[in-house]
Amino acid sequence: NERSLYGAIFSESFEETTTRAMSTTDITIPHAYGVMWSSDRQEIRTLIDTRMEIDGPSIPYQRSANGQIDLLLGKDFGPRNGDGWIAEHILYKVPLNETQLTILWNYFSNRYGINILEEDRYFQDLSFAYDLAGVGKTNAYDMHLTAKGLAAPIINVFEESLEPDSYLLWAHNNGDNTEWTGPRAKLERVWSFDKTGTVDLVKISVDPQDLPANSVQTGILLSHDFDFADEVTEIQMVEDGDLLSAFVQVEDGQYFTFFAGEDIPLNLSQYGATAARLSPNPGFEGKSTLKLNSPQNEDFSIIIFDQSGKRVSEAFTSATTGLLEYQIDLSNYPAGLYLIQVSSESFKGTYRFVR
Image (cartoon, rainbow, N blue to C red):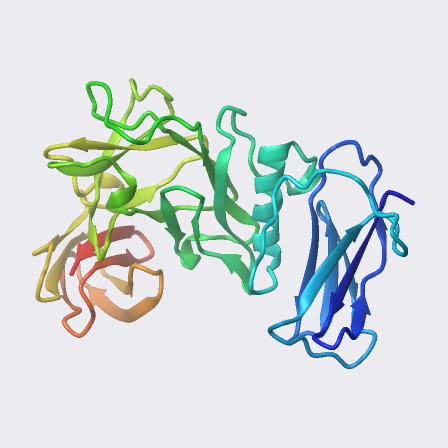
């Protein structure tokens, strides 16, 4: 049976545990094969495309650091294994959760044309088929919040902005990324977003060494126009440790790239800048005042997230009609980017604060 897959894991002393065989319907087209082993759950998973079989160890088993994994494609005994080409081999140190597997299946599907049916989350033009990566959330316990493909950028999504079964995937067109070109001084490499479910605010970061040399500011261009000729949004990237980062409100089917320029806008109205403001910002001592015009008497929640998306502070305050002032104090926290989320029954705004 040349269509079966058999996974075997051996300890240092070659004690054996196995998974049951699985078959594919057509071995002449590409498929993604995998084996996952978990010492915590004491189980082995065999995967073909998006299908999975789970087996427990057949004997008490602990794999040593010098153990080995054999993955046999084809006959499950003797020398008669399947004959084919392996296009790519990926190793992970830990078992992948369901969200991570879904993103991985989309990577294989986008690159090799594997049919993943209902797990497909990326529907952009096939010219944007390079280095697919993604973030997402299957449920409250299963998510993947930070990702980077084989090339820039790094994208982090905040858990609170994700509903269950929400994904944000991106891939690029393999354009040149070694020099700034054209009147906008942008990269020829362009990325495309595909959004499923609810994904609002993300942080896009890049290592400056992954971009051409630049003596001015670095920014992100966003548009639904691949040529960035119409309805273009410019966002300045600011220093974030060894990286450059910016917060972006993403839209499905949006294109983005990096560019070099001067006087690039730092704050956008989409962060609520017309409704409230932080002053000073940046606040290099970690202190700032949030000022907001409240149309009525109401209660506000103020939640602060660090650059990894971790909640560092949460407070509640009441406002009468008129000006609300709230003191932000992050002096005990490290320098970097913070996100301040302000909400009430009638208002919701998200603000970027540079510490």
